[in-house]
Image 1 (tube, one colour):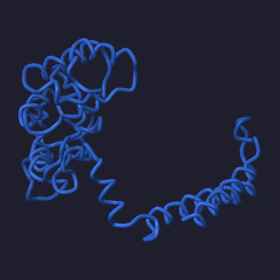
Image 2 (image 1 turned 45 degrees about the vertical axis):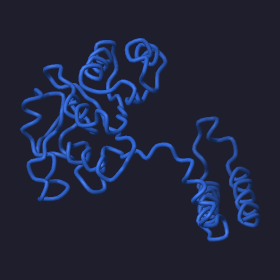
Image 3 (image 1 turned 90 degrees about the vertical axis):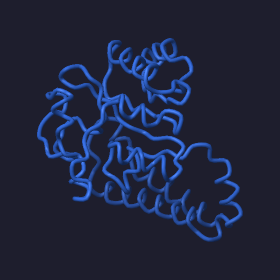
Length: 224
């Protein structure tokens, strides 16, 4: 392990010395330096990864001890490796296989209803086209959000926030990735969680101070 770290440190130092201050001056890095520095950075990352995955790095017992300290197993967009992402099927599967939290993305429809979808457009995960917020919730829920993943999930729809909150209540923590901003948006999310979910089981994903303060007042029991 020590030899891996020594090589990694040397490669990183070499990479830094090969990158003069052109980037800081917002000037292009000459091709010769770019060709030297970028492979050095990539190689140092590869060496460090090799160290982490080396059999000598950690014993099975070490891994068991580390795993025993994990407090959350989060299903990203639901059980998205086995079910179409951000659907009721993926959320139900996350609960079934024992995840402790499910992460979903929250957006607003044309008629001001909250629904679950990662992308801002419909093209990748549904049979719809264009911006998702250009449609009413009823229109969104008529789309097929399952066939892109596998034909056996044909007809799986885009769920509302209320539907997902209800299926999670009392069973799994509910992690919300907020895709929009604004006081009205925050209030509506808080209202849905209070009425249909469990505030203490809710985790709000935030990147700005003001929304964090608002949610601390509106959902004091929620985690941030």
